[in-house]
Amino acid sequence: MRDDSPFASLVTLASYFAVLSLFAVGGANAAIPEMHRIAVEVMHWMNDRQFADMYALAQVSPGPNVIIVTLIGYHVAGLAGAAVATVAMVGPTCVFAFFVGRTWDRFKDAPWRAAIQAGMVPVSLGLIAASAFVVARAADHNVIAAAVTIATGAVAYFTRINPLLMFAVAGAVGLAGWL
Amino acid sequence: MSDPAVAVTGAKSQRPTLTELFAAFVGVSISGFGGALPWARRMIVERRGWMTAEEFNEAFSLAQFLPGPNVVNFSIVFGQRFGGAPGAAVAILGLLGPPVVIVTVIGVLYAFYGDIDALGRVLTGISAAAAGLIIAMVAKMALPLFRKGIHFAPVVAIVGFVAIGLFRWPLPLVLIVLAPISIALAWVRR
Image 1 (cartoon, rainbow over the protein chains, first blue to last red):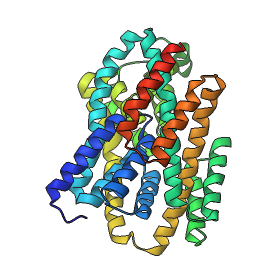
Image 2 (spheres, rainbow over the protein chains, first blue to last red; image 1 turned 90 degrees about the horizontal axis):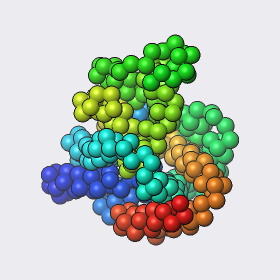
Image 3 (cartoon, rainbow over the protein chains, first blue to last red; image 1 turned 120 degrees about the horizontal axis):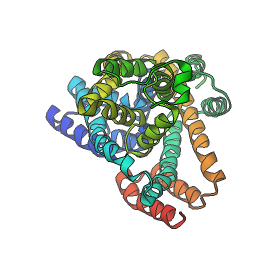
């Protein structure tokens, strides 16, 4: 909680996440570095560890990973903050998706449509790679933690094991106090 | 809508009612650990036969390319197609309603117990693993892109990574510069 007025916090949450909503090209994971930048570096709402905790909680909760914004909002401004952050993060993109979804099929064969799609994929890739880096840097404080990250990456790449199982193993390694 | 795959499963493709749409996305949301896409596909293509596999892929590629969370976009595109604005509304409410309630309860608990050392250690382990999952996702995305020989793609991806991950520049700024360049390169190479 910050000491400025609750209303000001809500406005800040709403404006940051509404903008982020429209720039999250590549999904929730692509937006993680910007969320971290705002919450930890610019606004000082939380420290690195709290951000990593919330990321982990959003991962093990059912539903889309974007609900990390609900946790950030709650942390900043309570229940109202949770509601405002969630609506701001999904509202603009929903409206955009609604209108594009209605017209997109009409341009199925347009060359500019193919160029936009082909051009956006590497941009998303770069953002998601940055996200991996930011989360790893917040979570991996020693060699064993880095080994957990690399091992999980390899298992997820080469097998179809349920991620919850990987989280359980990694959580147990953490509980043992090795990280 | 008369796809042989649908006929094989015996499902009859029909328009879902608003209640069915809502229930379907509630189901997707609460079973969607580790990515909701496989669950959405199972529900929509295999179980209900509301879309063929091709229609699903088409709609999902649109959802991926739109800004914002993919599965959120998908629920809007899908709901809109089958039920207009009310359809989109019930789909997104079904998708986000239960998870938001659950995660809010988790947030309340974290506010009380977040300082407990054991919890912190478990969460550190989980976030270390979560970072690994994103790395795997990056590798899976990168491989086809680089194999197809789209030569500008690695450069764009690396510039994006460095600007956002290392320099920590603001995302809107980076995108406003990088996205048009990348689209222009894709256009030239088409």
